[in-house]
Every structure is written in C-alpha cells, then in structure tokens.
Amino acid sequence: MRWDMLDEEACSVARTVSVIGDRWSLLILRDCFLKVRRFEQFQERLGVTRHVLADRLKKLVKTGVLVRSAYQDRPARYDYRLTDKGMALYPVLMALVHWGDTHGADGRARPVHYRHRGCGALLDPVTVCSECREPLDARDVAVEPGPGLPEGHGLLDLVLGARG
Amino acid sequence: MRWDMLDEEACSVARTVSVIGDRWSLLILRDCFLKVRRFEQFQERLGVTRHVLADRLKKLVKTGVLVRSAYQDRPARYDYRLTDKGMALYPVLMALVHWGDTHGADGRARPVHYRHRGCGALLDPVTVCSECREPLDARDVAVEPGPGLPEGHGLLDLVLGARG
DNA sequence: CCAACACCGTTCCAAAACAGAACCTTGACA
DNA sequence: TGTCAAGGTTCTGTTTTGGAACGGTGTTGG
Image (tube, rainbow over all chains, first blue to last red; front, side, top):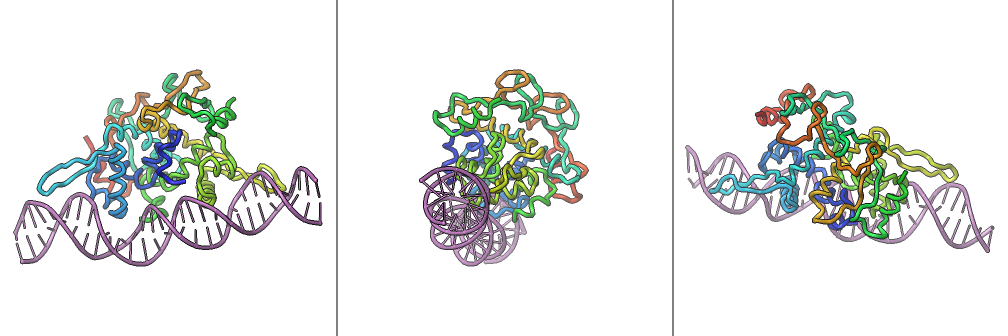
C-alpha cells in the first residue's frame, strides 16, 4: 500500500498517521511545542538533512498543521508556527512524552518537567473519559460502529467481533 | 541522523518515536487494540508487505510492546498481543483517533464510536492535568528542566528561553 | 500416497526515500 | 569586493520499501 492512499481510509488513525506518522514530523512537532520556529534551528536541533526537513515542513504546512509566515522582509525570511489544528496535537505529544518517561526510560530521570500554570503543580497527562472523567483503560472501552463506517468494511467484523 | 541513535537521546518523545514512530507500527498498534493478533490478519487488513510486517512485529516484540506466543503446536503458530507496556500506549492511540476525527475528517462522520463500560456513555478522550483534573492546553503548561536533562544540553536553552 | 490448503514467514528485484555534502539566492555588513 | 546568515535546492550513493514469488510445516481430503 502506498501512503497517499492512507488519507482516504475510513480510519481516523490512518488519516492522522498520513499527516504526522513519520518520525521526523513528530520530532518537528515536539520542537514546535518548545517554540522552535526557524528552519536552521530545526535543522541543528534535529540533525535531520535539510532536504528532508524542507519536505516535512512543506507537508505540515500543506496539511494545515503549521503555517509559514515572514518574520522579516529584505531578505525575506520565514518561520513555521503551529496553527490551531497543530495545537490540537498537544495531547498526542504529551501522551508520547508520558509513555517515554514511564516505559522507555530504563530508570533514567525525566529530562523535562511540566508545570500547570492553572494549579501550579508538576503534572502528568492523564487521558480520561469526557463524560465521567474517569481515567481510560483499553479494557473498559467498547468499540461500536459509527455512522461513518462504510457497509461491508472489514472493520465492521472486527468491531462486532470485539464486542462484549 | 540515524534511527538507532534516537533511543539514546535525552528526549522522551525521541525515545518513544524510535519505538512506534513509523507509520506501520502505529497502524499495527491500532489493530492490536482492535484485537487483531495474527500475521495474516494484520497483513490482509493493513495491506503492508509481508516483509515489512515481519520486521515491524519483530521490532515491537524486541521493545516489549508486543509479545509473541504460540496459540497452537503442530504446526507451530504464533500470535502477537499487547503487553502491559503496549497497553500503556492506549492514550497515544486515542489521541491520534480523536485528532483524526476532529481535525482530519473533512466533515466525514466517525467510523467508530467508543463506549465507556464504566459510565455507559459514548466518550471522547480528554487529556487532563493529573493534579487539578483540568483539560490541558499547551499554552497553560510551562516546561522546566528535570533531573534527567544533561548539563549543556541544547534543550536547556530552549526550556529556559520558553519560560514565562 | 498425492494434492490442496492454511499460516507464518523469507527471498528477490526494482522503485522510492534518505543521509551527507555541496551549492545557490537574497540581502546585510565591512 | 569579500564575508556572513538564513533558507532552501541539487547531487550522489546507500537504505528502505513495495510487490510478488517462494519455502517450511503440518492438516485435511481423495
């Protein structure tokens, strides 16, 4: 399967993955949330080749995750910032960070702490149910076919089979 | 930069990304949470080449996200299941799904609904602060250097610069 | 006995993506 | 005139991938 087919899939993960599902894009986004904005800065921090960086930035702009805007004229210089759509990826990044800290760290201490300005405490991200506010566990969530699931889609069998 | 260097980085995102940060791994994990377990089933559903699928499964087993176990002898047949470490990736997957549903759907209806067994309601995943339980927004979170951040690391400048 | 089948991979080749390095453009500055 | 900085693009050789065929192992059916 080729990647340009993924965004037409009836799967929300596949559509998201077609936008941000390569390694460099995720690392670029991490840096965006740390307020990195310029090509040279991304390049130096990530160690990615300029060719690939240019390609990924172009792709993220095209998909509306970043916006490219001039921060000076003469000579024209551009930077890259998160749009609202890009900002909405914050839970994804925080979930990645948290998993890395708790399951991929091999006992190493956390490189970064996150302080909630609202309550002043150091925080962990917790994913909860929007309705009852209880933390989510895969075993407590049942999948059901939604209105956007095409008839005869292979996913239907899985969804029904996974019931109970 | 090569990918085998990423898991030695002092960045939690980089370490996570070195494990699950390619497109196929994420889609394999999506299917794992839908209770797909067998090689043939992954291959048919994802359309990935068998070569790459074998490679990714091997990698996910090696990193402790999946476990390979025999579900029958004669002939020996193996399946792949999420470990606890793999289950802990649920927030990542739910965040990806939610972003795809709300920002990548182009008005399409959701293919799948998620019902919380605890409260019986259809849910959205919400990422909240572990301390005050308020939903997280990138603008409300300040980054601070943690004990695991090496001295002189480039990230330090960013963390300090991003303060306030 | 032999053929067909199911499952889980491995091997092969051509096409695509990537790393690394050099180069280009615009304009400031000396 | 020369150098520098930012933001890319171009070039070449190596890796990874897609696509398809093949292999191994045991079960089933004739």
